[in-house]
Image (cartoon, rainbow, N blue to C red; front, side, top):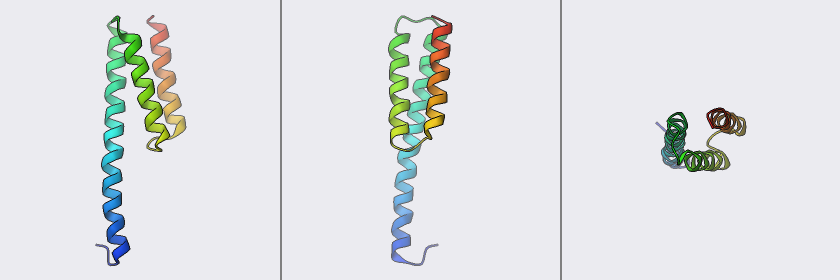
Length: 86
């Protein structure tokens, strides 16, 4: 347990940031799965779902929650899958 006042405050900040980060990651993963499912089912709205997923990946990366190379890999994988099943 922390002894100093600043350390105790930092624990609260870390908990808050961890919650926010996990929410962003979870939302990103969910949207990627929905986009991949739409692509594999050849849905009409697959293009829209892919756009939403790419936007969420960019948003998560811009907030520093995931590394830029991870974001690039996820976007590339999604684009390749989309173009292959077009």
